[in-house]
Structures are given as C-alpha cells and as structure tokens.
Length: 604
Image (cartoon, rainbow, N blue to C red):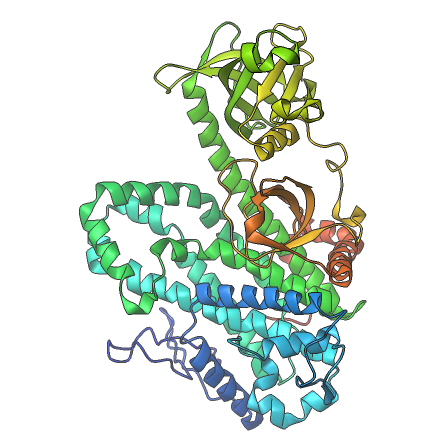
C-alpha cells in the first residue's frame, strides 16, 4: 500500500456536524478500497512552509468560495491595468514604495510593470501572495530572485490556491445541495442526472489535480513548475469537463422546468440558497463552476506563459499545457454550441410556413446569426415623398451563417410565412445615412439571386442606429475587419477592458467577463461596440457601459506583444503538438510523475 502526505484547505469528509465547519491543516483522507494513512511532512523546513500556506488558506479560502475568488482576481486585473494606464504621467505617488525581487525598493516616479504587479496585489482586498508567506520571507529567496521570477512564482502560486478555492466550492455543492435529503427526495432519478450530470467525476478530477499541485509545493519553497502537472491532468483526466459542459444546455433547461413544476424542490432550494454558508450565491452559480474553471485555468496557464523564460523547459511545458487546455475549451464550446444550435433550428423550423418553395432549415453546418423585426419601406422611390407617402410593413428576418429567410409574422404571432430566401454569400447592403436624417436608420438589402433566381432589393428601416449597423455587419461582414487577425492589429488600435460581466442576449452578441481585453472593430453613437477578444479571437457586440477604454499606448502595445508571443510560441510547437495528438495518452513530461494512485489500476 502506497501512502503520501496531502494537505487540503478543505473540511474532512468524515467529520461530524460539529467539525464540518472547521478547516483542517492536515486532512487524513481514506480511499474507498484502501486505508491510506497520510504521514507527516518529511522535512521540517518544508513543514513550516506548508503550515504557513495552510494558515494563509485558512484565512483566505475558508472565507472565499471560487465565485468570490474569480470576482476578486478579475477586479485586481482591472485595477492593475487602470494603474498602468496612468503610468506615463504619474506613477503611483511619492509615498508608495514596495520591495520586490532583489530587495530594491521602488518609491516615487515610474514603476516597472513587475514591481507594479506586486504592489497592486499587495494593496486592498487582495488574494494570498507567495512572497508574503513567512517561510518564503525568512528563507532569503526574495533577495536572490529577480522581480520577473517573483512574478512568475506568484502566477504559479495563484494557479494552486485558486484550484483549492474551486474544490472548496465543489464540496459545498456536493455537501449542501447534492447530499441534502429533502432536495434529493423531491427529484426523480432522471432529474437528478439532468441537474448534477457527472459532477462526481469533475470532483475526482479536481481532487487528483490539487493533490499533485500540493505535492509539488511541498518539494521546494521556490516552485519549480506547475504546467507539467497541468498538461498531464489535461491529457489524462480533464475530458470529463467536455461531457459536463455539453450537458449544460439540458441542465439549465431542466432546472427551470423543475422549479416551475416541482413545489417541494422549489421550497427546498430556496431554503438552501438562503443559508449563510452559501453567502448569497445561487445554485446555478455552482452548476456553472466546471466551465468557468476550465476556461480560467487556460488563462492562468496563459499568464504563466507570458512570464516564463523563452526557450526553456518551463516554456515548453506551458505551451503544451496551454494547447491542451485550449483544445478542451474549444471542444466544450463547440459541443455546447452544437447542442444549443440544433435545438434552436428545430424550434425555428416548427414556426415556418413556406408560401411556395420549401427550404430545408435544419443542417449540421447551419446556425442562427441574427433574427429580428425590421420595417420594409414600400411606395414611391423618390425620397421627397418619404414623409407623406412611404409605407412601412414589418417583416421578420432569420439570418443563418449560410442562408437568409425573409418572413412575415402571422396574425397570432406564433408562425412566420416565408416570403423570400437567399444564400448569405449573395447578399449586399448599402447604407443610406448620407442621404438625409430621414434615412438615418435605413439601409438597402440586395439579394443578387433570390429563391426565384432573380435579383431583388429591399429598403429596410431599423429602430436605432446601432441596430442598423448590427444588421449590416451580420448580413455583409465588413471586408475591412472580416479577415483581420490579432497579429495584424496595431498598437494604436482601440482596446477596451471589461469592467462588468455581460451575457449575450442575441446571437450576434458576445458574452464577456470582467478583465477581458478586446479590440474594437465597430462602434455606434448610441452605445454599442463590436469587438474581438484578445485571448481567443471571439467576436460580437456588447454595450459600451460594460467596458472602459485603455488609453495608454504602452499598455495596448504590451497586450499585443503578450498575445503575439503566445501565438508565436504555439506556432513553433505545432509540429510537436500534431505528433503528440496522434498518440496523446502516450506523451507525457519525462520529469513528472503523478502522485495520485488509481486504486483499481493498482489492484490489477
């Protein structure tokens, strides 16, 4: 029987009710098929470090659930960029000073980015820092390490502590909700599966991952690397995220249905959500944790990759980990989108009535880009008679990635009669804004070849300037920005950072999270922007009120450099990645061996 020491800032699963609220420094974990007794830390020097780490975790993660960690971390990123935005003129003031890396204290005047990052994370309601651990401060490491290395240590340390916070939230989901007898007895077996899916597999993957990360921290005060561990677990265990995220479409739908139909469940859920230990968080905020975590984990590795030395083993590990996480996130996104798009197409097709030629709507290669009502203008063509003689008829457009349907809503509002259709590649638009204020919200839509194989034009009016621009961009994407990649953006191109999370309300909108950085491709006078997110290239519209512009050209240039470095680093590894993907499970980092023992495999 193999044994190992693990330290988890979480409650003991075997503890009674009186102990369940305490955070143990050393948890003795019993596996189902074995009695694995965890031993004391082998070296006294590292014992003081781990004790200090857990003391930090006790004061921080005993209070912070993962949802709170995300909010705090993202707010720190925002504040960091805000401070750096003012660096060219002011710095941080004459009284501010911070000791970093080699022990140099930075006072008034210009503060270098590494020093600034440390200072900002040391002020206000911040997360736990590696450099603030007593064992680290007493070791003399801070006087020997460069500021850049300290920043790298902090980036790796955050990955570990955030995983502990994430696992704490998962345990609360399990203990507080899944193991609540009143809640579970009010549900059928199928509803339990719909709501909780494979959350047990998600928890097991996180526990394995956290144990190996903690074991790495036990090895040395100076963290050698974490990305090799991330890569191993991403390859071997993180596939469980994909099935969970894909199931979220049904999860959300069925949760709403159960709330409406099941009074017992609704009352039990309300009581559980109101308990203090949940800290005012909703049940759904726990259900979306896995997708939030795998996405955040990719960004944490990306942050390490930005700071690691070039042409080193740590860079190679970071690149491999980032590529594998990017693949998983992409599969999660594509799987969830595919399920949601298919359901949406089925729903739309049920409402369509074709007047003449029927067009098959449901296709694996088709999805909805935008839908909505506009006014078709008919009557005399002369703009002089616009005010008195123009007639406006409402029509409803369904724009797919490869098809446009022009429809008319039925009298009861439940059906849509298809009047015309056209391939999206055969669409052209013309803005009428320069022909007078009366035509400010008007544009011409040209079908070069409609369903009757002839050209036809529609003069359309929208409700606002932003709605007009959004329709034009969706119908005929701007040739100037359509194929523009992140590498072609210039430092003087406008950038914004998100200061308030926004969930897309329409297909052409982009959901953005706090601290996301985006390039601005289009903007309107009535408060909308179209942007491209730097870290994944996703595009869409969002309201101006949820972002703020990054004014400093230096900050914008650095954002581009970091983005381009990741692209270039990954570009240099593409050959190796393709080779690894052909035999993914056989490819592992030579210097890393996991500490988690799969008991079923061991018994074989």
